[in-house]
Amino acid sequence: MPATIETKGNALTYETIEAEAGLKAALAMSRADLVDAVRDSDLKGRGGAGFPTGMKWGFCAAEKADQKYIICNADEGEPGTFKDRVILTRFADLVFEGMTIGGRAIGASLGIIYLRAEYTYLRPHLVEVIQRRRAAGLLGHDVCGVEGFDFDILVAMGAGAYVCGEETALIESLEGFRGEPRNRPPFPVVAGLLNNPTVVNNVETLASVAAIFAKGADWFKTFGTDKSTGYKLFSISGDCDKPGVYEFPWGITVADLLKEVGGEGAKAVQIGGASGVCVPARDFARALAFEDIPTGGSVMVIGPERDILDVAENFLDFFVEESCGQCTPCRLGNVQMLEAVKLLKKGECPPAFLANVKALGATMQVASKCGLGQTSPSAFLSILEGFGDEIANRAPSA
Amino acid sequence: MATTTLQQDQLRTEVEALVEKLGPGRSSLIPILADVKRRFHAIDSETMQTIADVLDIHPVEVYSVASFYAFLHGAPEGQFVVRLCGTLSCDFAGKDAVADALKAELGIDFDQTTDDGLFTLEWASCVGMCDQGPALLVNDDVHTRVTPESAREILAACRAAAVAKEG
Image (cartoon, rainbow over all chains, first blue to last red; front, side, top):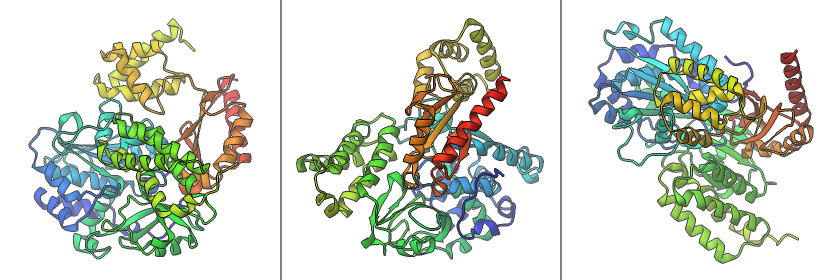
């Protein structure tokens, strides 16, 4: 385990999951039952988009193809997110267990973990865990003695591109192309890597799969809300006393979360990273859940002394840098938004320009091909809405 | 920093060995570029041509991919690429003071390389150390809770490592 990385937080359920319990339980079941079990748990994708995992697996399992793939998306690039780093450091076996179960369920013989270049220091650890699993018969030919079930896992490296966290861009990158998202349909479950049916799941989703098979879908559903089952890891940073990775059941309010991490008194919380929304203090009774504020788990606490426009500027700088450039609304829209923030900071933004930029934001949300472009205006638009007075009352700078 | 014929011959041998290992498909392109970048600290146009020849694709395809990814872009870089995280949490934790210290110590701005070819300074989008900022990467290694002082120590350790390698 890499020694450099100590991240604090609370106790994690993953610590209590017995090694290989999930895999053993899964391999005793039929392939159709595997998909049903995940469907029963109502597990939704932990990367942020929240697509039902069982449904994704079901689509892919239904495809007829000689080759299928399951990809673990470890391109954890959303600003403020680091829970996958912690999972890969401490619970890599659970992730590989989840991939193996997924491979069995959809009929894939190869799994690939796509690790972001910024986490290259984690690669030796992951390779070592994979080798140990091969030696123990948990990967390779006839996994765990199940005749005819061959499954192996490779590590592939990213090369520094936030957009590759988008699943079709990730696949383009694996194929050796620029990480530009594809048009959908077809979806990767039908035509993904090298045109073969492919499931792409987030690191935490796959670890949760292993836990669900170890303890059962009913156990999983004892956590969370009706529409957001289970628990979730949150990456907490910014202006709070105890930043770190915390596990909470879905449905926790922003206020309760802030109490746990020593972030009371915040003026706002950015939830979901650069692509997320900025929640002002008056809305701290809102809940983190798919039915209220959905998130991949990035929570950045913004203290009372911070300039909210600095926050908007930081995220727009990020999107100007990370837009892949394919779609005009995203490529040029973020530049315009950044310009508006800079003018607002100086107290010199003409109302007509601001109105145009707001309308442009709405266009970007509908006219961009992928999640990056669609969500890139969210933070700025939510800041304009939540902090209109603070922004409007700003005195022109000298 | 154009490569010499000797280096090109050596490079071709190495790329061919990599293709042998990774397979002749297009999907070998990014691992090859990453490897070349790691060893030569640049991917010049001759090198792109060599890689294109071995993979049997057009050199513009190689350029297109190399220029897309932050860790692969072709411009010459120093032996040590210092990437300071620019994300909000690292900003709150004091990244600007670290940035100033790095610039002053190296005598360069971001996206520049020192004259001795040792250091390149860049921004990183988010290095995933938001709970322990300010954070930076030096090549593959991550450093957390960096202060202006520790930033200077990190650079000094790189210089010492470079001297040890030469000697």
